Each structure stands twice: as C-alpha cells, then as structure tokens.
Image (cartoon, rainbow, N blue to C red; front, side):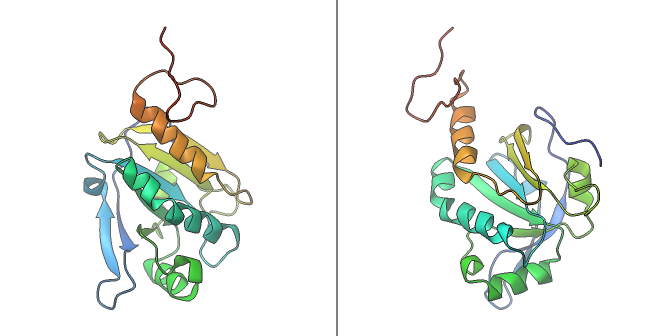
Length: 181
C-alpha cells in the first residue's frame, strides 16, 4: 500500500467524473482541484457502491449537509466505481436519490493511490476522510477499516476546531472555551 497522505501536505492534483444530479442530461460533471480552491472541503472515500455500510455513511453526510454549509465547507464523496455505477446506485437506493454533494468516480484509482487509501488486498478504498483547508492543505485525516463506518459528527467537530485556529482541548466542542497558554 502506498504511504497515507498526511496532515500538512498539499492535496494531490485530480480531475474526476462525478455524478451531480439525477436530472437527464445534467447527471455528470468533471470535478478537480479548482473546485477546492478557497473552500474548506471534506473528501471522504467509501469502498464500493451497492454495499451495506457505505450508504449509511453517504446518507449521514447528506443529512449533515446544512451543518457543513453553515461552516462554509463542501463535501466530496469518492469510490473507485465508475460514474455510471454511481448514477445507477443513486437511482435505485432511496437514501441516495437526493444527495446534495457529488459522487466522484476514481475508477482508475489514481487519487486513491496518491492518497494511500487503497486496501492492500481488496484494492478498494478504505473509509478515509480528509479535511482540506481553503489553501488545499490537508488538515485532518481519519481512516477506518472496510467494515467500520465513520462518525460524521466527529468530522464536523474537527472542522469547528480547525476553523477556530486556536488550541482546542480533548473533546472540545463549538461554543466551549479554547486554551489560552
């Protein structure tokens, strides 16, 4: 497995075909680094479409879209399935029909390899989450094994902490005091 990308590194260059709508003729769009510029971004990977844990995570990120927007943060979801498979899954899974963020297709596995998130034997992405700041710098990385879903509330809490640009103690939550050394 390639080395996992780390905090402080620049998010790699990419351009991926993405499902952005179910509307006929407007389903697909290319998304790349230019779409990250000047914005906080959560990039999360899931192993495969048409599986069991993955839609629970995707649906939970979707339910939290307003919370991310309130933090001026966009969400980008990625797996190594094609954009056609993403579209079929969205069309046939009730929890995915009204997604408010793109499903990106890393079917050549280039971004997954660059970030070091491919499972060594299954060759699908681990459940990796990256928070990228407006300058394109990775500020937080979390990776779960294939069978364990992530905690979207923790992603939001971490964005809150990063956006304070202050020292935040263990279990800190928005509204609590930060540390003043």
